[in-house]
Length: 385
Image (cartoon, rainbow, N blue to C red; front, side, top):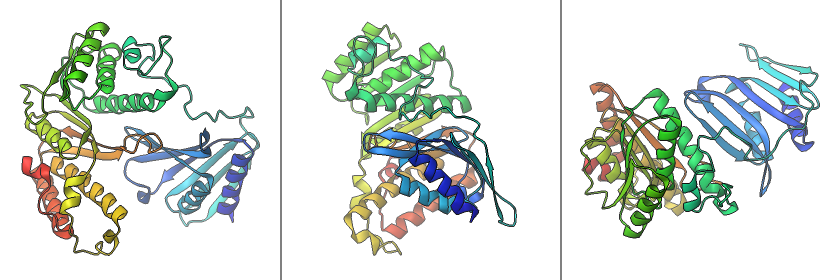
């Protein structure tokens, strides 16, 4: 009864425009590792009002926007099972739902602590890690001459800031030398490469050397011209195939949206170069899908093309993470940015550390088991390593 009443109050506050925030805390192990809290608030999107779920991890935040019925279903599923405390804040009244060790629920209602209407803008003002007034953003077609983000570039702007938040968190846990050597493989037009350089130099006070590797000479020429005009002395771009690029020193490797096995080529370069940090956002997963011949309990499901495609993506990136762990890296696979803004939304990060033979052996055993279960001959990264 207490759970249904709490959910009813949440739904009512949402529909009346009174919802300020709902916080889920006191997680159980089933909620997932490193997940501290979940915050819910109302946001206005182009497709109508949604509930924004902010998943607060130790080193990062992830946001997912869901329609109200899905949000309600999750609350009903999680309360008392994954989360033992929920606080609802609205302009009408506040409510706290808590669970005792025996599972008994208690609902407490209070006067509202805040009566000011909530801000439901999706992209609320934030402490940005990058100023939109940077001249190179205008050269890249992301802002106008007044330093205002163009309507057509909002997704890129969100992606840039999310990328910098991830880099900031990685550097807090694993600092790099001030003169770090960094490679961005498949840098394209370079807006993330420029953002990284700007952030490291002007926000962190570092003096990095960043090289963007891109096959298309026209883009390389454009990026080098933009870098010179911005006064970014430590940033340059070269026209080369990432398979041939062999840096003398490598502290951080980035490969964002390198297609299919190009991601594996980049990862192999990072491993061989003993990069301290590797950050990739894979794109296209053709190699494993062609090799997929499952003879496990998943086989009946994977006769459907869409499910086979998604399973191939999961296997491709999951095995990549395991192969990196077999080389002594500690990995994380998570949502880079909401699918609302880009379908290329998975990111793999890897941090180097002390080698642990037992853990590395276990990772290879897991790769072997996955290959056997799904009828995979060889993962391309496995071949490269």
